Image (tube, rainbow, N blue to C red; front, side):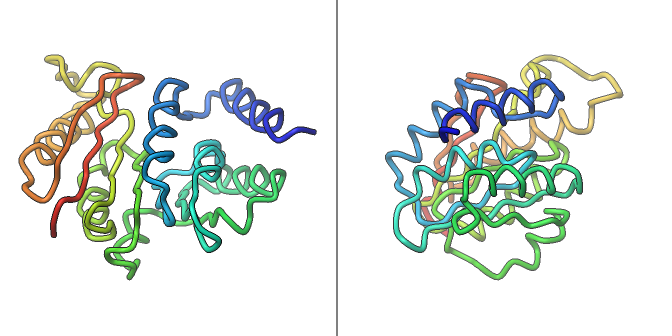
Length: 201
C-alpha cells in the first residue's frame, strides 16, 4: 500500500471515531512553516493517533532528526504506535506514554527544540507554554492549535462547562502577546493557531 494511502486511511479512521486531529487548513499552514524551518527536533504535546506527527516527519532535516510526541491516553498511545509502525517511522517518531504536565517538568532538554507543537488539554496550555519556552531554542517556534476553542475564546462565552479552559486560553493569548521573549501572532484558520517565535531567553 502506498504511503499516502495509509496516511489517508489513518485520517479517515480518526474522523470516523471522532478522534480530534488537526484540521486540513491548519495542517497545511504548519507544513509550510516546517518546510521553511527545516527542523531537526520537534516536540509534540498531544499525539492522539499519531496523524500530525506522521505528517510532520516528512519535513525533518538531518539524519538524526526526530519527533518526540507525548500521549496520556493508553488507547491513543497504542494506536499511534501501530500507525507509526505501518509507515516504518519508528526511527523518526518517539511516542512517550505519560501525562505531559508531569513528563515535561522532568525533561532536561533545555534550548534544543526547533519546533514545539501544543495540541493537548486546553486547560493545561499555560503549563505547556512555560515548559515550551524553556525547551525551545532561541529562534525556535512554538505553535498552539485550537486556541480559539470553537469561537469561545474571542466571544463573551462564560458558561460553566468550558469556562476554565476558555479563560486559560484567553490568558495564553495574552501571555504570548505580552512576553518580551516571544514574537507571536494569532492565525484565525481552523480553530485558531497561535505561532510564537522565541526571540531571547
